[in-house]
Structure formats: C-alpha cells, structure tokens
Image (cartoon, rainbow, N blue to C red):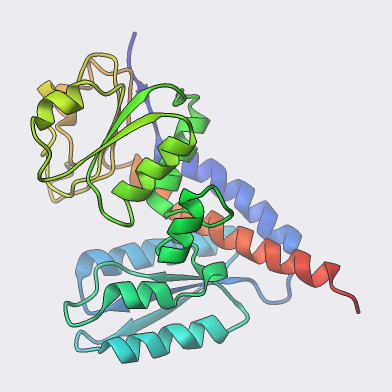
Length: 285
C-alpha cells in the first residue's frame, strides 16, 4: 500500500478558505494585523516574512512588517516589541528567528505579550502549553499536529522520536505529542546509539536542522515520517528518498511542514482577533 502523503500545501489552502470566512465574520472596520519583525538582511528570513504577509492578505488580514538593521541592540528591539504590544490592532507578533548574535533573543521573545504570542515562542506560553493550559503552541509543531488530525494519523499509544531539542521546535513538539498520549523520546547531539533509538519509532520527527542527517536505514518499515527541515537543494533533515517506499506516511519537502507553519501562525492570529472581539461584545456598555 503506498504511503500517505501528508500534503501541507493542499491542506493549508483548505484552512485559508476557512480562515477567510472567519475573518469576514468578524465584520471589523479595520482588519486584524499580524506584525512581523525582521532584524538584519538574511534572505531566507526575508522570504519567510513575505510569505506570511501574502498569507495574511489571502485571508483578509493585514500585515505590518518591521525591518531593523543588523546592528540593532537588544534595547532597540525590546522597544519595537513594546510598541507592537501597545497597538490594539496588532493581534499577533512574530519575531523572525534567528536574530543577530548581539541580541538577547530569549529576552526579546519573552517581551511579546502572551495574548499576542501567536508563534508560541515565549517561556510563559511554552509553560502553559506544556501544562495543557490555554496558549498558542509553537507554530511548526502545532502545524504538524494539525496534519496528523487532518490525515487521521493515530498518535495515542505510539512511540515517537523527536530528533532535535530547540525551544521553538523540538521541545514543544515533544510536549504536544505527549499531550496526545504518545510515548516520546527526544534525541540530540549527545544521544548515544542514535540510529537504534530512531529505529524504535513509529513516528519520526526530523527537527535537527542538518541536511539529511537522519538516514533512511535508521527508520523502520511502516513508520510515519515528518521532516521539519528545509535546506538548499530542496532537502530536509531526513533522507526521504530512502524511506518513501517503506513508510506509512510522510511529509514531502517542500510542501509538507512549511505551509502548515505559516497557516497555523495565521490561524492563531485569527483566533486572537476572535477572542478580543468576543470580549468586546460581552463587555457591558
């Protein structure tokens, strides 16, 4: 039986149509805004920011792009975030990762107001998500969980291995899988016998940030393979060509996880706008 293609590109289009309806239903004089902050001139980051702005337009939202020079200080970036926190039309704030080395990225992430943390990057938001409390989970792992639900990939009771432990991908991915009742192992650069650990997995998440680091012969037959990486040449973190014929489901690269990250970010921003509108309607006049 051929593997199920977890087509993030196609599903993102479905979700955008639904989100456009929800934005129109808000019937706001001024559409909600997703604000993006880009520090420096990294071309890949600039491309991601443009893609997010285009997605906003497609669902009827607005985007506000803040571009700061490479020499920006932590204090200057914190001030820019404070301005966006105070802007009532801005419902979501995205600080594009990575920032230049002189900036305290964690301090800047944590300055984003919790209700506008639609990318799930604050320590407060991560803690709430990990404790099953309301919060916007990190957009990439939340997008992967959406794909699992859309394609009816069972998670409960299965053994999942996440290769990578970054605070905005590997760690929140593990917490979301755990919340869905998977048994989760997080692997990293110091994991011993990594191929053997990966070989146990019924669900493999590649989130290590190195091209084709996870080799095809590490992955068992019938596994669900999710590749959250993207590198020059159109390859991800997993040697997908070696497992497509043996796995039960996989995310293509490109067209799998990437589109889901963007549409999940937009969905979180729409949800934030809906919450604000609901509170305004419920407030006594």
